[in-house]
Image: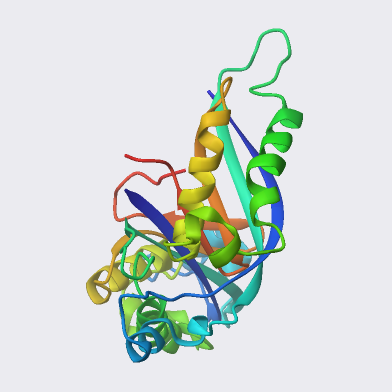
Length: 136
Length: 140
């Protein structure tokens, strides 16, 4: 098995708010991230797939195909968007880095046939990232 | 559904690799320049990885502010701008990055309870790093 990782970036805004909690509780829990106008990050996304090396091509999967899937399924939906209002999965789910990693996994997984999705890593900043390996 | 979250910190510290049980010559042979009697320093980078289910109420594995507070109080306040050979937590140990990584893991495991401590990674320079997961296998 060989592991292959492709990296890309997207910029998006978000804010953290749970409508079931009071305004005060939201402020206490989420601090500055609770500002309803949102704030932004330059996210870095690393997607790792795994599989056997194809005898004919020498590839685990064609990186060009992975790039196209990433662009179509993730970047089109998240790049330069306000995640809380423009990304369907975050209309009722808080777009934390944890939930973004899970959402990216769900967006990519159905479109990978030749290689298996191993890990989604989302960097919110250089000093903070989340890894998701799928349901275990 | 388990999610893994990593936060990165940095601290600067001095250390000297020296084993009192060995001769001066043996220490020089094993540790080379790292045995220099006055010590030397590094900008260490520390990564702490936690794991757990995502709390549907907050969308988070845990409150990162709690981790920051424990790391600041238990690790950075004790190690940053210190000489590691004099830090009580490492008494009796040669402060190699292996021992520091394992020591940091053990301190955090004792003091931090808001999520499962998965792994500690300590970068001594940009060219080497050390990971410890309390004896468990490290997830890639």
